[in-house]
Image 1 (tube, rainbow, N blue to C red):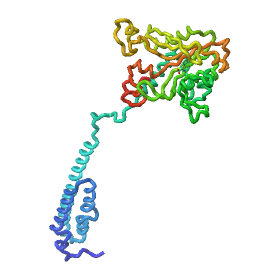
Image 2: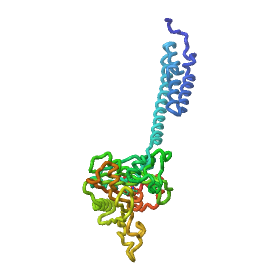
Image 3: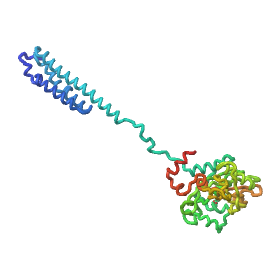
Image 4: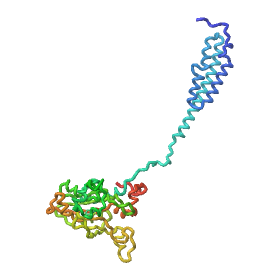
Length: 369
Ligand code: PHE
């Protein structure tokens, strides 16, 4: 190793000249001041305070100076590097502060904004009404049964004592699945589930059967090609029409209020004998609107009575078709309209509201389970 060059004059080492150091320092300070982000500052730090920065390189030159000049040069460089280091620290703090402020603003949670952008749905009132209707019978010990919506003609008609040329088959205006030869229909009522229940359950049978039914009606304010029924069936020893009236009475009182009367009007269904249409006393005016001088009632159109559906004693021919001995067993059955029940129970006036699925119709009924 050669000894330091005694004739080496520090003022002639450009990198160590006061002007050069000043220039390097000022450049560094300007770059620091200009750094707009923490990433920029990182680059600036590398360029002006890193190992290969002008000031670091100048520092290395000190060793080459004669000892007399080293202290002086070292002081100058130290001051310059100190100033740069200070400026870096200060700018770093400033930029971090700015970033924190920005994050605070950007990530602010406005607790007053609406939180329910994806509003909850609601159960359809037809579903809840249907369940509520069935529940009244469940409370009397009935079980709930279901059957298919695409049904064999045999279950929908034949087993229910509709003869092949029975006018009711056309009366019911059936949707056939494919051609009439397939023997498959969209069930026109829930009564085929009576047959399925009798064929699959041990006696006695007490079941309610809610579900969709289909007829070729046009959709209008009071009709829909798809509607719902609640079917009921009781088959046991010794059942009479008094039990039917009692069962319907409990339903009406459970669903609409105590003390409401029911009445039967003679009717005809191939699968019940005798058959009846069942009406309940209007739960709003309790019949008063039909009395002379009574105030008009919108719920029952001042009839005093509201039609609920059909019912009757199970025709022995149906029992035979289902393998039940009519000498030993008798039964009663009914079919109630769910749409009708929803309409007069809640003042729904247009069938369209029930089928359109607009949540604005559904929500006011709440989330009743
Ligand atoms: N199935 C009949 C209808 O849809 C209603 C009914 C059911 C009548 C049970 C009597 C007994 O109109």
